[in-house]
Image (cartoon, rainbow, N blue to C red; front, side, top):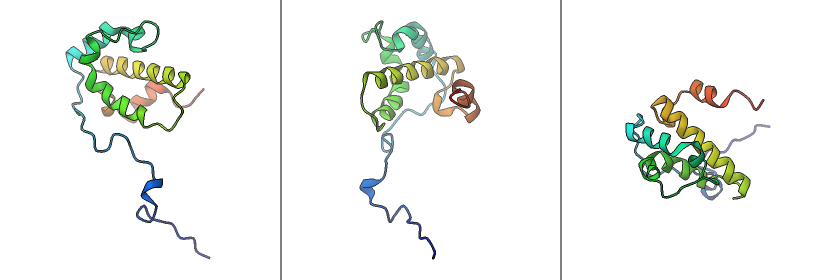
Length: 125
């Protein structure tokens, strides 16, 4: 008996996952601009985490908008309940990514697999 694998074309399109960033236009410039790096530094980790010390009116948020758009699009497409814990984890993750972008002077979409491992580690331990 031979198993038959369905191709992507045979699968009901409604049942397939689709990235929330496909079809959206993003500024794909790899370099973190000087003003973006400065804004990340001025906002600081406490504000970037968007918790108790979050100042949504700080001008830096507009400056880093192009970096946030991709992250927010991906976050919006995650298939998980919008709990307080999830929101906190996502804002913490975004803060870490933004700080590292400023340090590396490159956007996260240009990082190598090794650079991701250097930031996140190889396992959960």
